[in-house]
Image 1 (cartoon, rainbow, N blue to C red):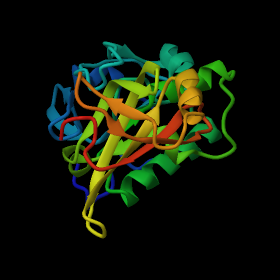
Image 2 (cartoon, rainbow, N blue to C red):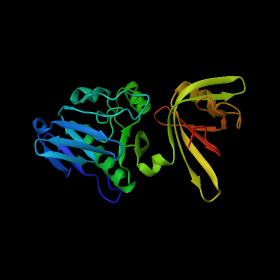
Image 3 (cartoon, helix red, strand yellow):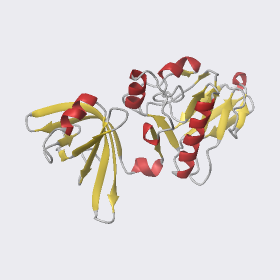
Length: 254
């Protein structure tokens, strides 16, 4: 996807109100493969193959080919309405980027428009659900938020990912305390102070709560047996994860 343009959208099924994009009948689709090197779906029909930035399935089912982009998730080979129960807001399936399910409801279309706006304004080329957020949403009875939440989804582009994003397990230590939690960490070099600032989330709620109570300056984070990097757990998000920040060398390889 060109970061200067709005997403190229294809709807596989009936046209979706308010969505400007190509419309293809499900019976015409003979291949649907995600290309992570360009954050696009290659849609193959009898007429040929075209790339689209975002696929929308309005009550339709499609066979897909997606590489594993998140070590916590094995992507499915088929997606459709039966996946809505386990998809974030019934729309984003864990491990499947740039594909949105919709039942055509006003609430879902409003959420879709918010996501499209954020993708455009942030020059994002990839949208993904965040598995801990999806799990928390399900645990809370699938209650829809009063308005779309930017922090609940993962938006990125090549430039962000090239700066270093780590998704996996990390070891936390503070004094005699030690625990392992899934994390998602990223960072950037801050030109104002010349330091590398990294941040992310501790996805295990109990471990995050315990770390939040540790003495200031006592927590370290390490990945893959590496040295511990000092960090601070700052606050709890609305989804039950805990925010984590650090300055200096991050615990993950750049």
